[in-house]
Length: 112
Length: 116
Image (tube, rainbow over all chains, first blue to last red; front, side, top):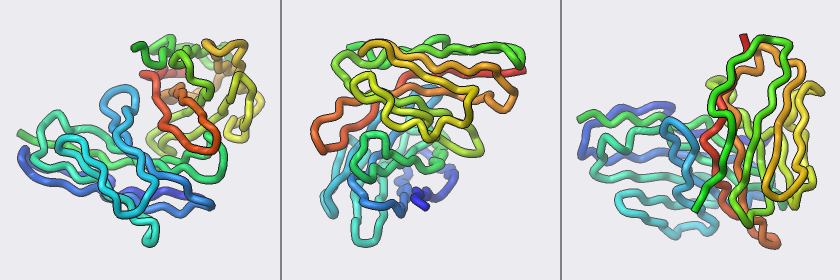
C-alpha cells in the first residue's frame, strides 16, 4: 500500500530553535515530493523536490530529498512564532496529477 | 491573483439534508481536486478532474457523494443525503497539468462541514 509517514507527529520548540521535520515515503513509481504549511485554513505550497541531494531553500526554510533512502527533511532555522503550523508532506506517484498522497502532518508549536 | 475560491466557508445542517459545496479554481488551471480532511485520516483525495472531465473518483466514499465540473471555472461536490460521519473540512485544489510533469496543487480555504 502506498504511504507517506511523517515524524514527529508534534513538536514544541522555543523561538530561535532549529527544527527538522521528517517524511518517509513508500509509493509505486515515485515522481516528486511536496511540502505544504497549513495554518488555520488552506495548505500553502512550500517546496517541490524531484531530484536527490539538491537542497531547495526559501528564507529560513530548506528541504532536501533522498530518493535512495526514500525520505525528505524540512529544516526551519531560527524559528519564529509565525512558523507554528501543521507541516504536510505529500508524494506524487504514477503518471496522474491525481496521484498525490499526503502524510498526516507534523504539528509544530513555537513558543515565545 | 485570486486563488482557489470555495463556498460556503462553514456549513451546518441536519442529517438527511442535501449539501452542495462550490469551488472556483485558479484561472488557467486545468486540473481540479476535491479532498476531505479529518483528524483521523488526514487529507484524502475524493475525485479529480482534468479539463473538466472526471479522471479518478475512486476516493468518493459512496453513492451519496457526487461531483460535477460543468466548465473550467466551476465545480460542485454534493452530498445527498448527508450523515454525521461526513463532518469534515472539504478542500478544493487546482493545478496546471503540463505534459508528464507534476505541478504543485494550490488549495482553497476549505469548507468546514458539520452534520448534526
